[in-house]
Image: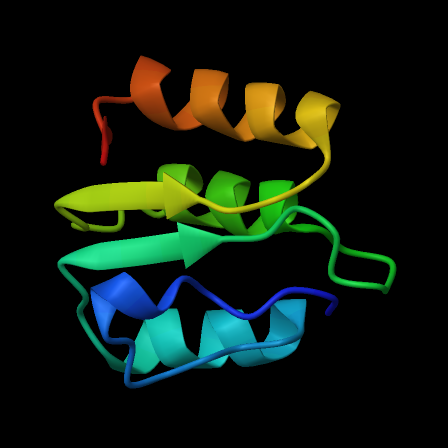
Length: 87
């Protein structure tokens, strides 16, 4: 993972892999999920977003801080299509 999440959101959990992200999402509820597309592994932030959509994860909002413009567009389109709110 190249980028830390933006400090203005005051994160308490920071997942740097797909597996870690799913562990947190399966075991906790969040009002905000912040995404980086490129996780430096087989899975990406888009895969995490797909998991959230497929499991109807009840997050209130999301923020994308990725430098990958195609990844950003894909995650934004997916999440907003399913009613997640971007901040």
